[in-house]
Length: 181
Image (tube, rainbow, N blue to C red; front, side):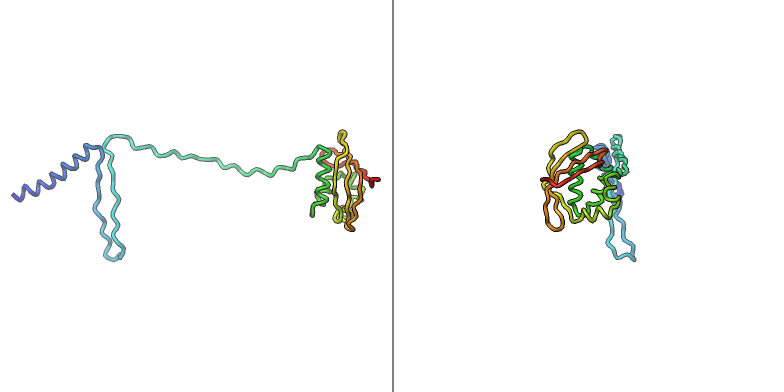
């Protein structure tokens, strides 16, 4: 009688396993791993292993997508102002801006810089205490613009002026100015 009980238990387990196989998926649970006698950590159990018995292909892994990395673009060169009025506005703004003397000087052609003895330091000595206010366009014809402004100096004196600038390739190629009457 004992022999039949010993055979019956594995037979029941085998029948249960075949029943799971008929469902298409079999779960096999490995025996827990005992910790080593010298390790005080708790025993870790092994993960479940799932066997696909449905003959269905395993899902394809997600495709790897490579995104090309572009090198950063070089900063664009400042656009050359071709409109005479835009150049006048840029020039007066540069003179008015602390530290803007270099940008203002670069808006002057060599022939206009020559009126400052082509000496940047002479120009800066004039431009540092100077500011433009009430800048207004009077007329524009081709590359030439006439405008009015109040010129202020370090003494706080505002003198009204009229000026005519000619612009070529984004720089002031000639200029005249005189106090307005």
